[in-house]
Length: 303
Image (cartoon, rainbow, N blue to C red):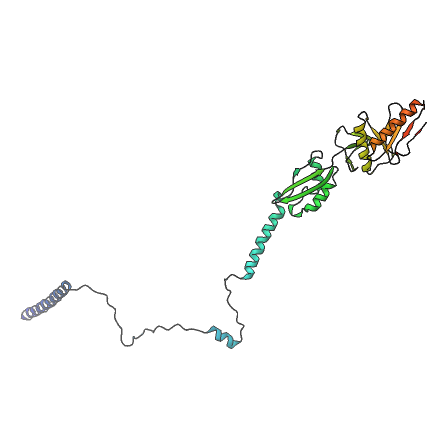
């Protein structure tokens, strides 16, 4: 009994002691918890060697140039993205090609019409077609050549051509002035004062000249033109004259005979001689079919 109570009391003592130690630890922890200061992060400097931690290695640098030279490798420069004369030349070439293509293909640079001055008898279409410029590019136009082509158009004496940008063509012409109407069979030609014949474009009421040559005349002699105009002025009743290269101009008198006047500017004297000769022949009762006054010094007649 005594032994049992002794053990029990000793166990109680040990238990109470442990409880006191636990209680004391708890109070100490609570005291420290109430007095804890806020933590401040501060850099620490480590001294000494750290066990198990590898130091950081410095980056190694390699001299590739020296290594390549040592190995005998060819060295090339890295491409540079800097403008060069080749790039500028290529750009300029592309630009010039585009401009050239436009200048060649643009419809506005082709000749489709012209401004015409000085023409009243020759149609514009005939001049435009004869010029050789219709449908041509303005860069291919030769004004001198075009003017020469226009002078070949019947009825044009001279021409001037000028070209302006982009495709404006101006033409000034001098027309041949028709003085007579030359009839060769069914063909009718206008004749200017120089005797040049060209295509008739209508009826201007000109004095008809009937060719008795039998062939196509290249032109009338200027003297024949002068003589015909003088005869028409002297004899208003003359409706037509005849012409052949041998005897020149002639007229069919309404009294039944033909009179030959030749050519030249002396028609006033020749008509005077003719009237005197015919009056004498009629007074003498002569009959005749031809009177020739080509030569003032030697007029004659034929029965």
